[in-house]
Image (cartoon, rainbow, N blue to C red; front, side, top):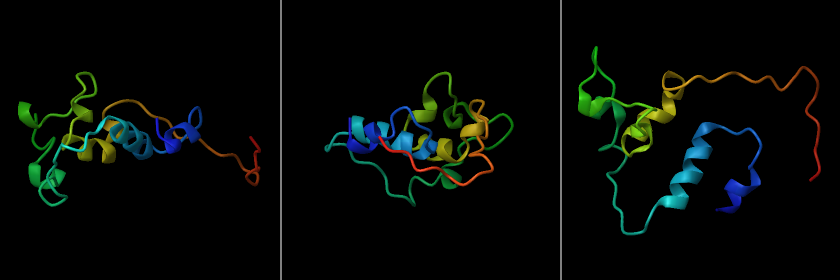
Length: 99
């Protein structure tokens, strides 16, 4: 596990960082992916239509949300895949914690 992943273990962090940690720990050097323009979710039309076509549907239940390039859509629309909540940091000033 990378230092970034272990540094935030057990704490709250944005979902994008969690996904990046998971992808970086499972990716291999021989895998090639399309560039940003070629994997644009709007261009690929992920989750467009009612209902969206089966080959362009992203679901949490079957793990398709974690497959590239659908994951680009998932990061921006995670609240549509599963319930999330807002957490308040509180009204006071942030406290400095020592580990």
